[in-house]
Image (tube, rainbow, N blue to C red; front, side, top):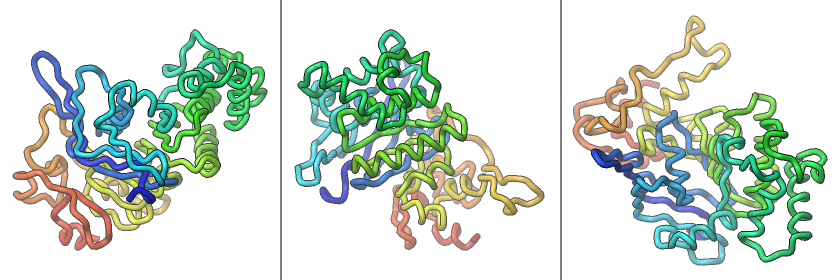
Length: 335
């Protein structure tokens, strides 16, 4: 596994506590990221995608209680894996930024308005590499040029509010990649951007992935972006991964009823009846009141009594997909 995999997560759970109650945000989340490839973590808002990324980076709030059976990271394909579960806060901080980096959804709220772009990117080198200030500035300017920020020497001294949304996102990418990480976690990196700038950022990320040879955990709610960016996909619903597959397999032969519902609700030219999309009935259950069995059962047209009685484990279908559904024959007989 070490040669083919860079990150393995098994049985990740996150519980949020307050004085009166607790809420389980993640339940038995398991996936792996292949070396040099992109895994898309896709789902609706509130499905647990961002909580998963924050758990990996040890950035959860203080009232969160994360546990996992396995959370192993291979910094190098020839090295033994690092067990992230067993690292203390300082060891995780050293891993974060140097080997694993993250791009957040909204760069304006992630960048410090009191520091210049150059100083903020250079701070990563200050934390992880012992180099002098002249070399540090040179590295930052080179990285700004690499992410295609024009007039990089001048932009080094710019404040975040002086940059456009697209330029701020490029600066965030530069900050994430300045220490040459092997794994990049990108949490909805194009959500706040218009379509043209989004396409430019995605093109940039693909080019940099090839240039750096890094793996990407790409978090998104946009299946169009998944089709464009990802090699593998993990679909999340109500705090669980309900299906895992290669991107090609997921789009050509989805196995979980929720995944099928997502795909049939996408606008496609000439594919809808009378110009109408086919929505998924019902709504996502509250994490405070999850169904006893399958979380999707109340919205699923294939659901049986068995689905409402017990939790459904991920199982491998004949297609090769892993799906949290026991109704393989019923689902495929409706094709």
